[in-house]
Length: 373
Image (cartoon, rainbow, N blue to C red; front, side, top):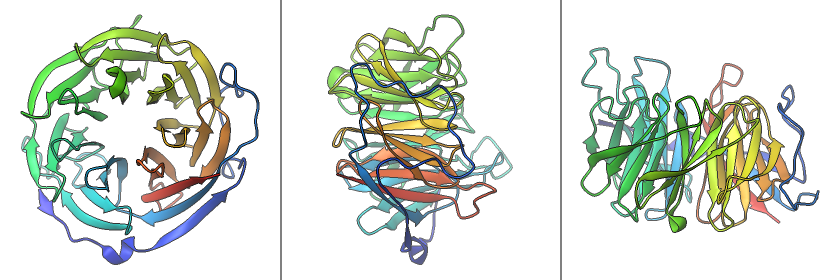
């Protein structure tokens, strides 16, 4: 792992992208796919009540996911560029208050290869109890653990510890790190105190073996939720026992990949790429409450418990859709390029990561989204 110089001048520049009023249409040339809007059960058609201000901040190349630490009040970002051998990757510690990078490192070389590939970081999660940052190294099927303070490497797990590792979620109450593995039907488990691997959780679907993508934790109800890419199913895991306790079908969702949870209202939000929509489920029994077309390539979802808003990153449409908890669209924010992931901080500010595309050479940006009434 190597320490990198921090491009401070570059990060100091921000640009206002959009001030979203009620409902803003999709970016030019893009169209939503999937079915027409189906409001949540009991919800009334309503005009949007939120407005949004979005600012773009230049960041490092290849941004994938971010995670906010309440302990350090910093946003941690994982980035990786290109296909194997991946030689360019960064783990970034970003200060939202100053819009500056505090620290940045390149992951260690992948010891099992001789072509210069590093343990490139794609997924990321923060462990505020231990003061650490976990990253998933998708290309090697590995997981890395860094110190929050200076991003020093604490532990590098062996290759294939979690094949095609994607999402990571930290359960501080049980000292567990959960890592999804779309290459298998297993959620891999690690002890966050001892940094040792534990028995994984095998998911059992209705037919084909599920491919778990995004993870969402409801710590108060001791539930971990995973969404399956190939089978349009949501799995509920009891974090106390480490066992699958429920499986919910999501009819019509094609390419389900993102999931978020509202623990207080017991609702699940599932984003599906191919059908371009957000599906709302009752977390207690899997009952479908609504389905809303958001935009092509609906990849990831995030829930804001402060303001009761849901953010969906529509990678193909180049937009972030913001909805209220009942599924009423509040805005379509044109972020440009390929929005990949959204994190919401404890103040209710959303941070969207946008990847560069051939049609948007000024991609690879962080977009700060502030909701106002």
